[in-house]
Structure formats: structure tokens, C-alpha cells
Image (cartoon, rainbow, N blue to C red; front, side, top):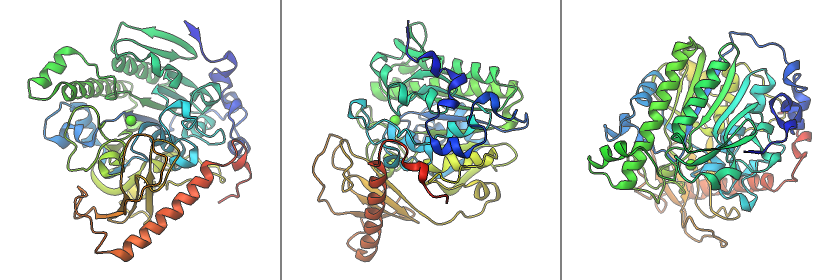
Length: 474
Ligand SMILES: [Ca+2]
């Protein structure tokens, strides 16, 4: 056993150690959890569940029964299920950084996948959604995957989570399989070979909600499933092979099924504890299906993980809030950066004025079926330093401009490929490039994309700390 986190960083001290001077100066409770106003028992809980590399098309309610996902299918029926739900990036770390901060990935400093680049480290001056909930007296916990930097300075216990049971990047190498892995549990690294990791994460989540049943909680359950390594119970894998799927696809579907079972168990626990009516449940995947494992159904979408075609960024996204959100399919455009302001508003948490968010608060639109303001949304990712001529996209209404994906390997030269233009309403599969027929629109959208790239790149390379302390209130 090995202690990873110094005892000074254990939960009781984490709020005092929050590095965001913006937060520290803006919120009255920033001096420590013990000084926070005792929370009202009526406050709403949040359960934010994230799958890893799960395709939109992995849900049985989307794929017509290729998979078995009864818990998620039921949750979808009880939730507002978004027809236009988007991640912030087509890969893990940047998508998560944006979800946690309400800001585009580049602005958070997280643009890479591998820690040795230094570009998976969330800027120390970023404020996370966990910072906000913790400062308001919520019990905050992360169970599962943290992919926003390694080392003590980036540790989730320093980024708003008072509890952490999972794996940081320091433990990625120790995830040999879902049956042989290490987890860090409240600062202590422990190896496990006695249970399937997805089930283990579910157990930890059930334990968290039981322990915090009497106070408001914000739990982020970040499953690793169905991300590699591909392991699942043999019997389940065989059941999908018997349906004709290749080994990788059968294994992925089995991994999804175990996760679905765990989600059902956790939601059942909310019911048993009488918390379901007072808990917002969000479910999403961080990006689309992996290009390199199996060939699985993903609705009509073009592309996969790594690409900014919809196959990489259009993800399953649903929010259940009994009595407040009307269940059913919804056409509201929602993006990962919207989750922070929307969930904060739902829980009546006032945002610090200096937070420079890219997301918008959709609460009013979702609760009252109102149209949110029109806006443009942007994406970009490549392996290596960001080169915005590669694999970038912007969405403006039904129109989507794409600077094409070239490779998932490291690149060092700008792309010379011309942008493509699609109308997603008519062509959700992005098959009909309308760029040559709409040169003015392409020029306008491409110009907006370049302006966005300039803005986020300037923010990405800002000095390491303190830059946002002087940001003017919005
Ligand atoms: Ca992922």
C-alpha cells in the first residue's frame, strides 16, 4: 500500500487549499467546509454519471435492441433526452476538463491525452463545478476516472472533490485489466484483483450516497467503461458473440451492460433512500466510440472518437429531475460547457462574477420549454500542440463547418484541406458537403472559427497562475 496524497490534502482541508483566487475572494465560505452555512436539507443533490467512449448507438433504446441497457433505457424514459447533446471534445481529457469548468478545453489547458505532454493539467486558476458545490456546503465526491492532470497540484482533492476514490493519471499504468487494477481511495493506493472494476465503482457510489443521504451531495461517477482495456465477464461476451458480433464489439457491449446494471443498482439505491425525487441525475458519455476497437453501431453519425464529425462528439446525454424537467426527447442544443452553469442554477448556487464561462445556463429553457439564445459552438482536437487547421468544427444553427480530420497521430504541420459544410437538419450523417455551393457562408463560418481559435489559444497559453484573479466581472 502506498499513500499518494499528503495528509494535509485530505478532504477536511481541501477547500482552504483551493487555488482559485477568484473563488476564494468571491464566495463567503471559501475559508473551509466547517465554516460553511449548514446546508438546507431540501437542497437538490446531483449525480453526474459519465461513461467513457460510449457511443450514442450503444443504448438499446437507440439501436433497436442490439445491446441490453434496461436501466439506461428506463432512465432515458424518465429524463429529458437530448437529440442534440454534444461533448466538448472527441477525446477523454479535454471533454472532461470542459465539463468540469464550463469552458472550452483549450482555455483550461487540457488539450492532450498523455500526461507526459503536460497538456492534461487543468490550469491551477480554473474553478471546477466541484469547487462551487463544495463551497456551498455540498458533500462532493469523484468516483472513477480523473484525467485532468497528475501530481499533487492537479489532484481531484485539490480541485473541489472532498472525496476521491478512483484513478488519476498516475495510476493509468496500473490498470492492467478490469480484473487487475489499482484505485486510490481517499489518498491511499490499493491494488484489487477480486472484483470487476465497474462493479467496484458502483459499490463505491452506492456507499457514497448512503453515507451522505442526510445532506446535499454532488457525486461525479466517472466509469471507465467501455474504454480499453477490453474485459468483461465471459458469459456476457459470449452472449453477444452468439448474436454475431466480433470479439471486441461483443466485449464492449458486455462492458456497457455491466455498467448499465450498476447504474440501475445506484438509481435503485436513490429510490430506497427516498432521494430520487430530490436528485438531479445526469448521464452522458465523454466522446464517441473508439476507432480502434470493434465496429459498432453509432446511429447515422459519421466518424468516431478523435474526430469532430458528429460520431466523435454527439453523445448520449440525458437529465432526470422529477417534477421539474418534462421527460421525453428534446431538441435543445446542449453542450458539456452548459452543465456547470445549468446545474449550479438548478441548485441555486450563485456563480462568482469573474467566472468567464463558455457555457450558458439552460435551466429556464429546459424547465419551461423556452428557446435558449442562439449561439455558435466550437470544437477542435489534434494530438500534439493545437493546430486549429486540423479537425475543427463550428455549429451555427443547423449549419456545421468542419475542418477535416486528418490523423489521430501526432501532427506538427498545418492542414491544407479545405473546410466542409453540412446541414445537420437535412444531413445528420454529414455526407453531403455543401461548401462549394455556399462560399459566403463558408467564409463567414470559417472566419468565426478562426476568431474563436485565436481567443482560446491566447487563454490556453496564459501564465500558469493568477491570470484570472484580475478578470473583470461580467
Ligand atoms: Ca473517452
